[in-house]
Image (cartoon, rainbow, N blue to C red; front, side, top):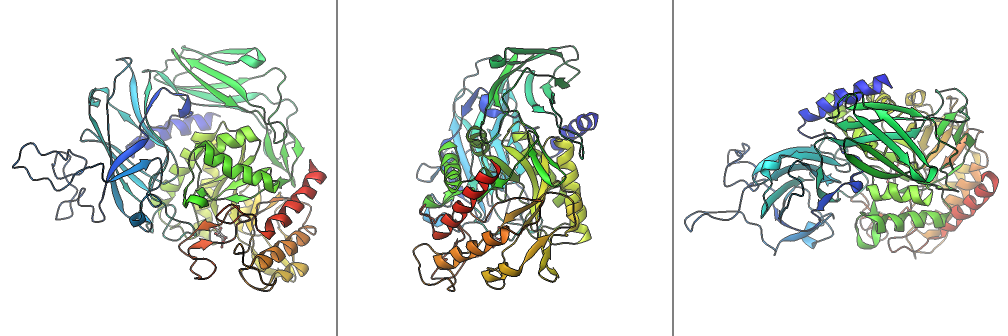
Length: 614
Ligand code: GCB
């Protein structure tokens, strides 16, 4: 815990260097002015609003800069930019689905919102909060730059000086740039659509001068390798901005008649206490308790589930008992409307589809999804694997790339470290083996464990095919550092046919639980031929029949599977003009929400597994 304290304190400083204030968690509990809705925009592929004609960044007060007012002071003044209702986009939401001309757009768009603001309390502090902006956001308020953030799927907030806010006509501008880059996270190449824009909520948050910025209130788990604790304590910490040693802090859980008084030890205060008899959170009983934290006149309320999760020997133990994960991978996309998923309705649509398949677990690929998703998983009792977009060929040798990945990891964990549903932090997907890669990934794993000692850490690994006769081995050196050895395999889709499964076995040299984090084949909904015909539903169905038969021969450390993927999803890499047309067709459901034949194979398998394990 001491190490974690030091880390959080150091990082708070480091984050400031990137000009962004450390994250406020549980943002939904905060008093805020929503800035969602209609925003005006300017498309700026040449970044004319940012650079002068010599390609130098414009000075903050330069009237040509698009963060400055577009209204000429008099009739002689020339303005070559302007915001107008004719050009407006909905926030939150990707730009691609909102206008046909944005479908393939990758570049800069300036967003502008005007708003009035009446401070309730002149002593408050203000923050501008963004749920996510893909990929880079430069934020300006009334002509002043508040900060810059990179990373398309994690939240961030900038402190807003009260003196900058006006009662009428605040002029908020965000330069959003979703150009892909070799030294970015993710990098140039991904198998998903690069939806751009302000994709999640925006709000102006008001907090007292001293306020509860973040907290961890979770059940403690056993030391790695030790048997699970019979009656785990609650442990964690509370971070109160501007708190002084000796300030009172209290935590209460009304339903349990529980109240704990603490004394602040500076901004960070450690906590460790016993709770009266609890109903533990699990997929069968997703019990959430109302938890109130108060300090320095500030109070926040959250809904928290209490459970333990750990890898122990060859098993994964939830509340001390072995579980089998009946999973499915999900992209954060609503295929019916060809857009990024955002908000509770979308979350419920996706998670209920997973439930219908018989899942008790989802892998949220390949980036942190909207907070509505992990909140809904908490309520529905669905276990979650949450991942950062360290995908394929990241530039592992570049320390700046590692810093970007770490920042996203920190934001992902900070936003969700009180969600009972999340049991696995994943630091990446299918990264090619080399010493440089292993050092990079190891460093992320170490960081994830420092930040959160209560969950498993993993990554989707690749397989050493044909390492032994008829045995594929998961021996990626990262296996040594993860808690759960997870691998993606496409036996019968990439290379060979599904009947290969009949003679294939799997193993790993690591004495750890083994999880299949992906397997899948394409099938175009409504295309029927025979099982040997690529892209028809029968091929995909056959693939899953062979796979599920093979699963009966998995080694005894096999703890679950998450096939690829819940829904067909958009990908610019999928260009078969008959069957794909820009869609990856590996969904159990098609892009209209219809079930394919393969769906029923997995559903039957999950019924069997549920009977066996639940
Ligand atoms: C994978 C990737 C996933 C792809 C999938 C596919 O291994 O992890 O992002 O979409 O394969 O369909 O090829």
